[in-house]
Image (cartoon, rainbow, N blue to C red; front, side, top):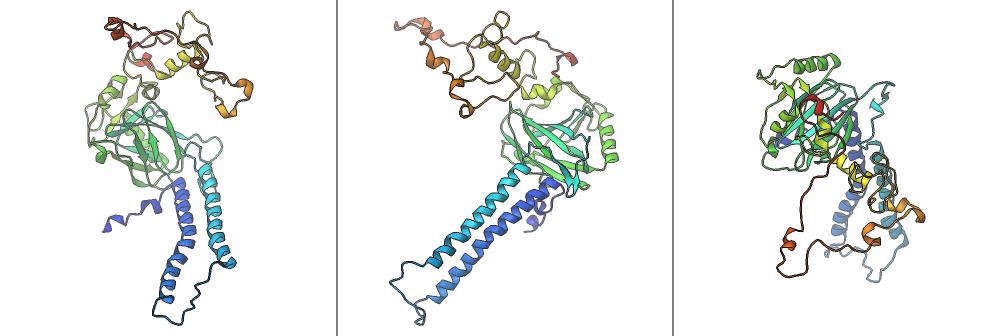
Length: 381
């Protein structure tokens, strides 16, 4: 019964989580303005108009009351308006992709303060944390400096997970081949709990980690401890190379904390683009290749030749592309499969023709640039 006494969501340690807690309390209070009177009036009406109470007014012809209609409709409408206003403003102010503008009430982020970047990878069934500024990485252990904004870049390698540190901020999902972001801060020292709040398989119950909120000097000492850790000694595992990542990526359960004293350059970007293994084309290169050539030979075709993306007249890769509803009529094009005559298939109409058995094939598009492998030179910047 005492398991519910640690109400960490209502007693957080970070300003973002505090604002989210306040939103929960405000929304609950606004809804209780309706719920409590309704519950009280239900009991009152049942008692007052019980069968044995012959003194209660009985009016079988009653069908309308303007005053009663105003109360019934105006009160919920006002509550919905208030909830809508609070939700709309909070949704934008607490957008996880939006950098935080303050570290605490009345304490705006000082000009020139750079957020600490932490790259998070959800594995089966453990968490990998990469600190690109410090050049280190850890598994199932996260340390953050107090009162310094933190920018999390998150991705995954397998099924969907949800990164959640209740004392710091709301949960954010991680998905393979995609990158999500979370901006947050911790305002007091302590050890807090982090976990995956989305079921992801057999080892899900062990997919949790400690979060250490440290003062600046304490965080520097922790970084130095990780950086000087030796492979094979305690938590030390040496340098996190692409080969080492492919090893820890394999499913394992209840993994103890591990330290990596170095990280191969560009590893996180390769994880996002699903090209950590050698001779695997990165998704960004494949998409750029298709965007530029329409699927043709990149060494023979010019930029923009080939089949363009369906109904896309927007900018090149890296910029925002207009949606269909934002385009003017003259910008809207017709997709190739709707405007061109269908091409004949590779098969044959004769029954039993072996050609029909060889209609599908698998080929990996050649991406621009040399295919390299190895240690530091193969990383993506």
